[in-house]
Length: 305
Image (cartoon, rainbow, N blue to C red; front, top):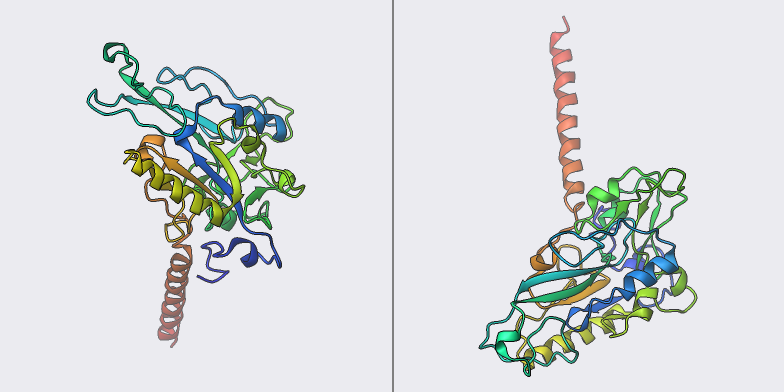
C-alpha cells in the first residue's frame, strides 16, 4: 500500500519521512510473570501527569482501574478464570504465577479460580487508523515508530476514538477547568523519555520485568523464544499477540505473551485497521458521483429543443 492509501505506513519511521531514524521501539509484555502489582500504572501516571481515575471495585473482579482510557494509559487487568483441573501438573513459568496451583498446598485448600494478570497499553500499530483519520495532525508518528498525541493541536473531534480497533484512545473526562478535558489521550511510550535515552516509566518500574522495552525486532525474537520455553515446560496455552507483521494492523509496537485466548483478555482476536477499505470506498463513491453527474448532463442535453 502506498503512503496515501489511508492504510498507514509499512515502515513506520522511514515512511513518515524520517531519515537515519533509530530502530523501531516498543514493548513486549510477558503476562506469565506479571504479579498484578500495578507499579506500571502508578509510574505511568506520575511521569505523564495523568490524573486519578475513578477508582472503585467493579463487582466482577479485584481490578479497580477498569480499562484503558484517557486517564489510564496502562491498565493491569485481573482476569479470573476456573483453576486448572486437579490432575493437571504444576508448571514452572519462571516466576510464581498469582493464583496458579502450588504443588505443596493440599488439593482441598487450593482456590477454585486463578488470575491471569495482564498489563495492557496502546499497541502503537504499524497501520494506525488513528493517524489516518486525525484532521488536525495532532497524532504523529515519531522517529521511534511510535504514535504520539500533541495536546495543543487536538481539537477533541473524537475521530481517532472510533477508528482504533483496540478501543485504546479516549477523550479525557475530568473537572471543569482542566485544559485537557475533551482532548484525546493515550500512551506515548514516554516519548520525552525516549528522546533522552531513558526507558519508558512503566518498564523501568516493573519489578518482574514483565514489561520489556527495546527494539521491536529484538523483542519479537525474545518473545518467540519465551513462548518456546513455556511450551517445553508444558504451558501449551502460551501464545503471542500483536507480533505478526502480516496481521490486520501490520503488527504492533506492543506485543503480548498471553496464557489464554485473546478474547479472555478483552483483546480482538483478529484486529484490522478500520481505515483499510476507505480508499476503495472513496473510489466507488467518486465513481457513483461521476455517474450521477453524467446522467444529469445527458438528461439536460436530451431535454433541449
